[in-house]
Amino acid sequence: MEEESKYYVNAKELPELFPTQFHEARFWEFLGRTVGTFGFLEEILAKAIFAFTATKPYEEAEVQEAYEKWLPKLESALTDQLFNLTESFGKAVREHPMAKTENLSDLIESLKEASKIRNVLCHGSWSIPDSNGRSIPFFVNRKKEVFETPVDIEFLIQVQAHVKELICDIINSVTQMGLQFPGSNGPGKPIW
Image (cartoon, rainbow, N blue to C red):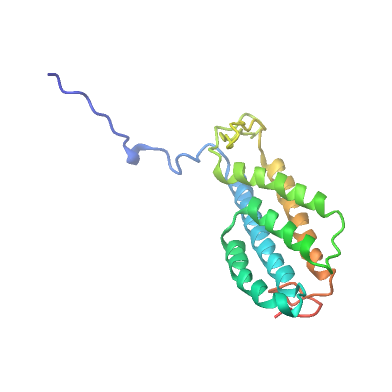
């Protein structure tokens, strides 16, 4: 029997920074800044969930049960990703009698749409850019939908700015109740 040939990639011969060598450094900088902004959004959502769940008033008979359910909510807020954090945030706001968030459904919808872009930016495989610096990342979601939008630095700048606005909306949802946003030195009554 004839022995089969075997082939191996010689990593030492690959281009420097393979497989990211085709995009300019500015592209990777803005992609990193956008992904970092999404990470901060998730942190802000977790803190907002804490704020709403920590300040929700309960009848005396409900306190023990609410307290027992609180730790798992907080643990989920620390470990969930953007879509599930959005769901938890919406629920916490809707259940809080003093919440003053206008257009909550619009905010929740914007967060869910942002989570789709986050997944593409974080998990996509970046193809070689075209002559205008645009690249379509290879990404297929769980519904088998293929992402087909060309992404360039301007796209990333717009996404990062939109996520920054979402962060401000979430912080405002807490501070509109007269509370200090957790972890900040901002105005309002401290929660803890």
